[in-house]
Amino acid sequence: MKKIIILIFLFQIKIYSYTFIPMDVTQTDHLKSYGIVYRALENGVNVYWLLNYRGGSFIVMSDNYEGECLKEGVLFSKISEEKKNYLLSEVEKSVLLEKAPKLAVYSPPGKEPWDDAVTLVLDYAKIPYDVIYDREILSGKINEYEWVHLHHEDFTGQLDRFYIFSFYEEWFQNLIKMQKKLSSELGYDKYWKMKRDVAKQIKNYVQKGGFLFAMCSATNSLDDALSLGYQDIIPSLLDGDGTTFPQIDYSQTIAFENFKLNDKPTIELDDINYEPSNRLEWENKYFKLKTFSPKFDLVEAMLTQNHTDRIKEFLGRTTSFDKGKIKKEVVVLADSYDKNYAKYIHGFFGEGFFTFLAGHDPEDYVHYVNDPPTELSYFKNSPGYRLILNNVLFPASQEKKKKT
Image 1: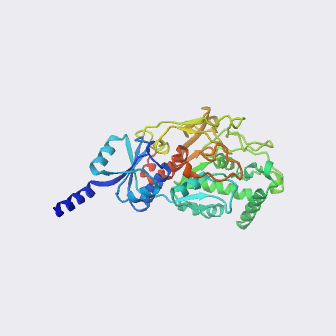
Image 2: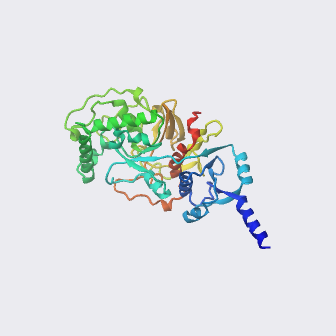
Image 3: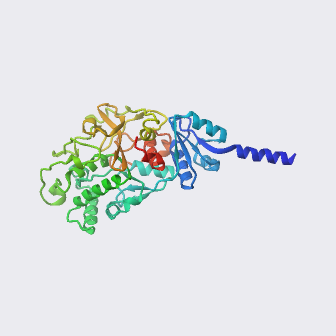
């Protein structure tokens, strides 16, 4: 009798060999689910991503993640070989994730007076990353990473034009001093020339096969900087000399064209960005993800997996993209609430990829300077933050090499 019980127990262990993590509305913590998947990949365990099935669910090819799922509050079930094969045959397309990508977040030394949605969600999901800045970019260290994130940064060197309202505030004066000190250490006579070279190196990183994910002002300011070269548009208040009337070279840009730089004393960098004149107009409004078939638009499908296609709007230094300024080969993954503008875009560039998400924080409609960071334990099922984590997992797939 004892032998029979042992055999039954061993048989049950053998039957339930895999961990299924649903990502539909039943999931108790969507964000930490991505962390479970990432750590499985770190440990050499393959994961199937079931695109368009129950919100983009996962099959972790091991039954050793029960304890971690319970600890992190992630809903899961153990499934058999038969069930796994059934699911793989039922879904329109599954993607095999094989290797945890090495991640870097571009962020300045010291504390900025605003949060960064990507570092918040990576920390919450317990996904490791390195912090790099201009020194590491210019030294070539950026090429050690498969995925790089940019957030609230102005690569033109105008410091997001915060000088218009905040020039005498301590945080802004410290920012100017830091930029000038770093650029001097790196051999530049003007800090903004350093920022322009950083933009070029980021562009080269993507061209050579890297994956770039950017949010907020890093999206359009990158192309602004690339279009300028070394032309000086920096006010004397910041660099001590005059400016030139710039000639914009759209052939150097990644995602945008036909835009104009702002030459008025207002905070906008360019006419790529759009937000309603009444900032409260889009509060409690939603933008909508487009639907992509994994069979025909595999990359786009991976980047839009979610448990809902309606996501609450959120503002930023860049809130949405004027569709008339987006290059024709770039794919719009989601329109803004106002469908004349795009919220989420993706494209191929050289051998690499880029994805731009407009807005600052998916769970803070208007994030002001010196606001406290968002507490993600209150937003563990955030569809907006899921878009960020889709981008984190995308480089783990060999499918990314197949340009569809």
